[in-house]
Amino acid sequence: MKATESDFHAWMGGVQTRMESTLARLLPQPQVAPARLHQAMRYAVLEGGKRVRPLLAFAAGELAGAAAERLEIAAAAVELVHAYSLAHDDLPCMDDDVLRRGKPTVHVQYGEATALLAGDALQSLAFQLLAEHRLADDARAQLEMVRALAAAAGSRGMAGGQQIDLEATGTALSVPALEFMHIHKTGALIRAAVALGAACGSLPDGERQALDRYAKAVGLAFQVVDDILDAEASTATLGKTAGKDSRQGKPTYVSAMGIARARELAETLRAQAQSALQGCGSRARRLAALADFIVLRKF
Amino acid sequence: MKATESDFHAWMGGVQTRMESTLARLLPQPQVAPARLHQAMRYAVLEGGKRVRPLLAFAAGELAGAAAERLEIAAAAVELVHAYSLAHDDLPCMDDDVLRRGKPTVHVQYGEATALLAGDALQSLAFQLLAEHRLADDARAQLEMVRALAAAAGSRGMAGGQQIDLEATGTALSVPALEFMHIHKTGALIRAAVALGAACGSLPDGERQALDRYAKAVGLAFQVVDDILDAEASTATLGKTAGKDSRQGKPTYVSAMGIARARELAETLRAQAQSALQGCGSRARRLAALADFIVLRKF
Image 1: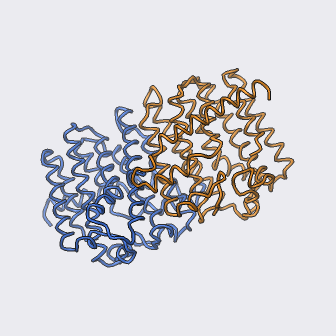
Image 2 (image 1 turned 120 degrees about the horizontal axis):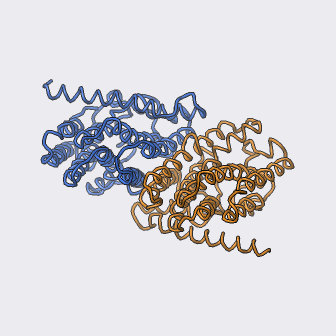
Image 3 (image 1 turned 180 degrees about the vertical axis):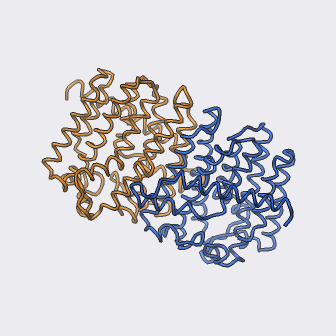
């Protein structure tokens, strides 16, 4: 491993460890009533996941000179929205999945009704966190963070993307239609992670826009790589049911363009992400390394 | 009908009409993609309900000298949270109900997955509205509005109350345990409606606290009356399935204390609500009339 890679992995591990303890602290404690709901919320969030969105928020925050005490809150809010969407997405009326991050899904462990409520309450908690901690010097800027996360989560963001996904199941989508779906389903929240991380500090408008171009490319690359891994990897490596997309008749980049062209697309998007960072210099090194990590990951 | 009653009914009709057009304007338009999701969101919210929470927000706002342009946004946010909770509560894994506000429930009309996503997206939209419109002169005060609604919706508010409800089904609850459930399940959001309405204007701390005592009493009275109506009224009058609570083994005030004592309790709570308003004078007349309306309603 090269020195820069080892440095990046140390940084990544540090953020992941910090996020685990931040989330464990911010989530309602498991013995507080209603205890079963709080246990389900913690189960849905803790001990799992690569924390890609928090990593992006921290990397963007580093570029913007943001304090880690702010970043951990903003990153937690984004991660709670992500975790709630997984708990709902796994429900029998949605993807009906039983395995996630190597563990039984929330409804398998706690029942459907509690999984539904846990997801609902995680979404509320995300906005509560963004509102009750001081994350920006200017309160109007902090309201804009709330707005950005809400828009990214809502019907013209993540939830809208899940609806498009729902309606697309069993059909063949063109590559532009697939892209439209993923820009909503995963892209919106990834862009919000980067934007919220940056908003914890301060950035000139030009760099803010460059970061958004970076986030768009990384968000799409993340999904393309997910599709490739789902087609190739084993359930054990992924920690979730592999090969499921094609069995469920979900359109994927692999089904739409074949695995070789999907790999080329991931590479093109990685180059786009790197190129967006060019004006930012070495302050963007974590973002640059994350784009590589997201495209080159094996799980 | 007395003159004051007729005046109150005119005011109420005015707020209800205004809210219908506000909600129709703020919800995503039905032809915007993903159209089916947006149609389901509108179906879950529009043309239905007494708009009790918006009425409370407007009445509290009148006391606090708030502009109607702010109140309609704050009231809409609270109503969207309420509507999302109904869409989720009616799902087969929860109460499994097919009729709401005289119409098929959202999942009967649009399918479970879309009903789930519509509820999720309505919650996001509520916070988006609170963040993107100017609702208070001081942005920190507006962040506090976001925090208050999120806390009221979350695991230590409404969603927590639904979890307690879930676990109580089929058991006999004591009256204090019933009260604990309802303070969360319906009370928290009703208190938030009053608090957000007041926060659109300005009030001395003493009146703010008096309003909160009012809201606590009204919230509980609302639930006691709901239980009485569920036991007595017909499905046609209610616009939702009547007698359902007892058939589902849900503990109610009627099952816990009998209908006569439940009526007495509703009357006591109405008196408590009125007494909380005593120091506010005639500026609180809408709130006073609403407390009467909520307890004396027949549907």
